[in-house]
Image (cartoon, rainbow, N blue to C red):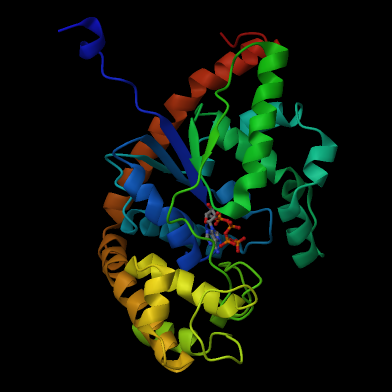
Length: 339
Ligand code: AQP
């Protein structure tokens, strides 16, 4: 056997995170977490609950703690296997925050001012436009660069932040020598961007104040059916994907993501039928699709000892992976070695 055949090629490294700001929505699931599970065998995967990011908007401490534990259990229930992936809670690895400070000194004020999520969130939280909301993308860059991740699976809404992380990595490498891998976006084929059921021009968000705007992955079947029945559509009665039909386009996208059917197949299936039938079919399909996640979540939530053990192992792995990179960064920028 040749030398080349004997060495197994190193797997590419992938990183992503999700905020513990509430129960995951169908959007979070289809656009992000469902795909993470599918990537675990092919990539060296690192997934975390980003509680440091969550406090950029006001959080009630006890609720944040409970939400973080629930988000971790949900992540596993959605298919993340802690034996295959590094699965942890962001604040348990202090290297993210440490690296974020160094990177913030290589990030320009103007760059951060252009971030659309900052503009959106500061409009939504006008009473709390804190510096963390502004520097959030630097922390996100640190999350990724601390692991020298090759790939970042992201929804379309996060593209701008990843672009910034890439710019920071390139700038740092140019100034201090090759240190960081410049990460590439990984937009999964089935990673559609789902929109609010009540205002289909807005993305479906777990912190939306209108509970009917999103389907949460722990919603029971009756709730799911009710939310889809109330979904905003249009005054036509034609199930087809077309510009201007935002509500129907969104429902068709959802139906396609959970059934695997194409838009043409869906149009044919509902030809001559009313929106009522279509909405019921979408509700049924979503409820069936989410049923196994709900039961796995119930099983995991009853086993706190297992969850705590997974969290401890995950943070230890994450800390070790990032400490080496952070030490290199400290040497590069000129900090004296800590003996
Ligand atoms: N509507 C969506 N469609 C597809 N993907 C989505 N994601 C979020 N919403 C949708 C993807 O989910 C991942 C985790 O997101 P996050 O929780 O870290 O933050 P977010 O993007 O701000 O998600 P939310 O639900 O809108 O949270 P809040 O309401 O707290 O701000 C990301 O990969 C994201 O692309």
